[in-house]
Image (cartoon, rainbow, N blue to C red; front, top):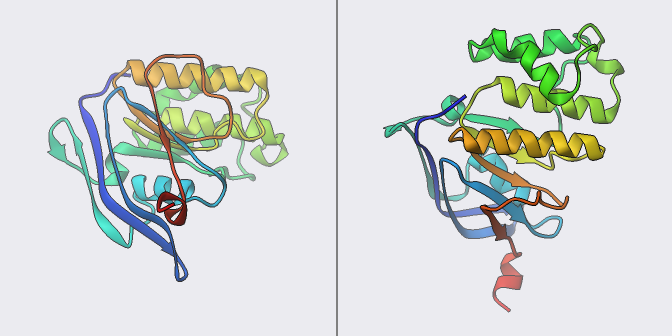
Length: 210
């Protein structure tokens, strides 16, 4: 899959949790073929920023703009989000879960290819609720791929994944970037050995003032 020019711009975003500011005056620009890797200690605001980028939350202050092929778009039009909680329906089979997500994007013919890409071929009829934690994570990766959205937001994609699963993630990322997509991710895992990763390290507001 190849994509037209996609762009996300976050300008001057701040996020509070209760009466405490966890992200202060954060700005980030992402365009096609960018891979942005957010780094920082636990609680520094990585997940909050990913949710803002995905359109699942709003910052307290700041402005966010999204364009695709030069036209202004909404977050759901261009964004696929993989969070800590995998959006998997346990009572449905692996295949049924993927068909549900593929139909949302009008690309149900991609399901078999997605199963092959993440190593779940042969488990199509298995209930998702009986999968291991790593297999559920692979299913979530397949859901991300069948969405066919140009901007991927990934929060700890390698959680519960073994070494072969990490290789699957690396391959999916490389393919998506090569096709003109863009990715923002946060992970404590070691980054893949590839050029072009832009690292953004987050600090707590009080740390930044030291």
